[in-house]
Length: 421
Image (cartoon, rainbow, N blue to C red):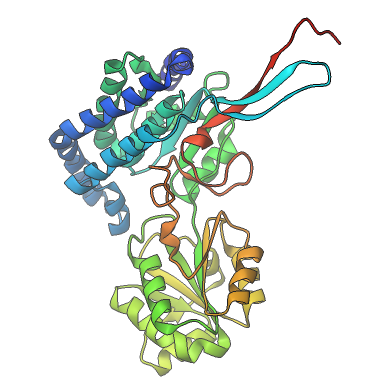
């Protein structure tokens, strides 16, 4: 039996105990795991140093190295997010609807676990703890397939979380981490994608290539997450100082994340006023700019370096200090551009015109749409979810940051007194 199938089988068997586990036991497991992650801080950081050394040797880009890096502060953040999930109200057993049918049968629709959740993710070791906490909170078992770049970090965190399950009297097999590397690792990943009957849902978290590979090759249900070609649109009424703050934050605060802005749109009539300060601030922060003819002309007139954009730039997720710039005729063209080239993740408008903001909110088709705020807020922690298992960019089942409630489904409970049809 392959490693992926063996571990999916163990998780499937353990999911029965997780489904039956009390709220108190599930909460205890997360708190026990959080304590063990905190206690294992030195071990986890040592493991992360090994991963970082390999990443640098392999030439991983600086923004992706930033995603991989674990520090004391980030481990504290991981532990805090786990505890925040534990403190949330029980997402299982909530009665969503209830009534007595004409037959006299009493019906309730209640929330229940999905069963076994599989996660395939890249160099994001924090996902290991986030996925565990959210799955434990919802009574699910989880099979994790972390990227090879983060292997040692993920293993150290997973071991601590498994110890938390056991300490709470729950099966350690409810958390599995697929270890295989290299070519065999790729084969095991494909087997995990096709583990029908063992895996109830697969959630990929990473770049476009990983997500599309899962969508194309998986035979188990997939929730698409994460690819973020996000835009900030500067309406002609935008305040210039606000525009600078929002665009610089959205692009540079953590450029390797899916909620960072990749494209800047600006109303043509306000380009002379807004582009010079915004683009100068971006260049000062190390951002390479490419733009259309109008944007380049404005930039050149003010001594700001900007290369020529090609068609592919409008739809590209750079995940780096690079940004495309495009001038539009107004709100309608901005909305059309966003809906054509965006990935349904996070989009923002900067405006002093209430009607323009409301039009943008209504017209843009994305999981999160902002007026006068950075796209960087699209995050489970920022949304009060404690942490997230991913940010869904599809419309079925769940959309946007996925907290605990996203890992539940429902079933109907019907109680009768001998009724027949």
